[in-house]
Length: 118
Length: 112
Image (cartoon, rainbow over all chains, first blue to last red):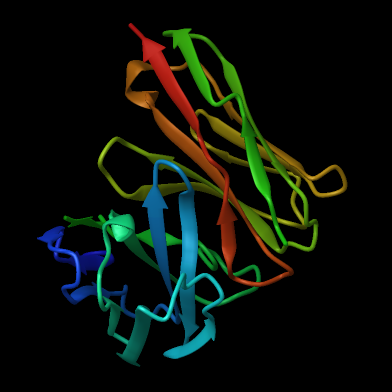
C-alpha cells in the first residue's frame, strides 16, 4: 500500500478563497482523522470518521470548516472562506479497528498539506 | 478532557548516550498510548503503541512503558545516534475513544 495520500502538498491562496484538501486513507482502514499542526497550538484533532460517518467534529474551529467522507477511500476538508489564521499544516491519518489485534489503532499519517493564506 | 504534556521540551545529547523522554496524561480512561517521531517538514511516523494491559513495549533500541495509575509513559532510547534527531510526540486518547490528543513533543538533538 502507498500509505495515506494527501493532496495538495502545498497550497498558497488569498484570504476569502475556498480551499479543499484531499485524503486517501490506507485500504482497509475504517478510521480517518484530520489534524492541524501549528507552532502555537501543536497538533490538534479537527474531526474523525468511522466507516465514513463523522464521529467527533468538536475540534472543527468554525463553520467555515467542513469535512466529508463520501466513501471509504476518499475524504475532503474544506475551508470557505479561508483566513490567514488558517495557515497551518493539515494532516490526514487512518487506522483500523479496535482491540488488541496486531496493528490495531496505530495511526498512519500522510505527509501533510501545508496551507498558506495570504 | 484529555491533556497531554511532555518533558523536556528539548534535549541535546552526545552520540551513544541513553536517554528518557517523559509523557504525562490526565485521563486514565485509555485503551492504549502511542509514541511518534516527526522529522522537520515531514509527517508523523508511529514508533510504538502500548496497550493499556501492557506495561512495556520494545522495538529495537526503543522501549516504552505505560503506568495508567500515575498517568505517565516514558520512551527510553538506548545508545542514541545522530539519526535519532527528531521531535518525539506521545498521544493518548480521550475517554476510551479514538480521538487521540497529542503532547507538544520533545525535540531531540543527538550530536556526533
